[in-house]
Length: 184
Ligand code: ADP
Ligand code: 5GP
Image 1 (cartoon, protein in one colour):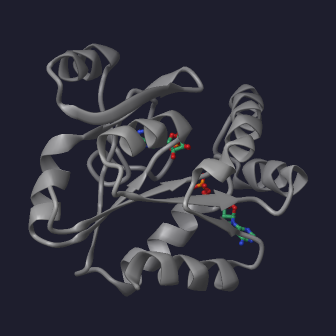
Image 2 (cartoon, helix red, strand yellow):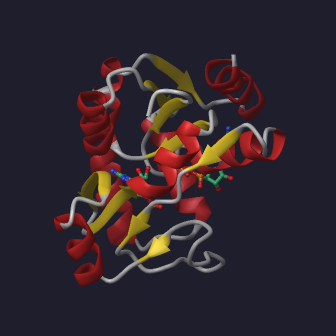
């Protein structure tokens, strides 16, 4: 897995990772390969199996994890999330830029297994803004929002571990910085 580029994008839930990555994929559909993760969480309204995630049962996830089929995996807010190896190794060999959008524990695992991966942290302008983005998105229960804000504290505190930090305040500014970091 040495031909293409592996890029890890991490940041608290609600910071705008999905919004930024969607714009990037729309602009560079042929250069970027977005790794579709597997998760045991239930699909949100509008999410489709195989598009946002591979929605697997816990038993199916654990069986594949035990068979060594994940590049990395982690438990987050009560659910398992992981990067299946198969699709991404092929994309890297084809020279594509492979993007992984994963949480902190997974990013740490990739730092060990692929030290050459570029790791980008997306930070909120403040915790207050993060909370209002999570609430305004209206996709998560209060209980999930509390768990996500708790993780957010840990994640923001670890931002120094990353190669680059981008603050997603103004979307266009953040997008430009992300584009510079990923494409150039
Ligand atoms: P994540 O994928 O990191 O969980 P999302 O991309 O779903 O976050 O964004 C969370 C919410 O914040 C969405 O409603 C999105 O429209 C909004 N959002 C994203 N970026 C910005 C921004 N720069 N300014 C204001 N709102 C934003
Ligand atoms: P959400 O439930 O909001 O889609 O994602 C919750 C968290 O899981 C986010 O921080 C997201 O980046 C992370 N995540 C998504 N896919 C993966 C994955 O494959 N591995 C890991 N470690 N985290 C993931």
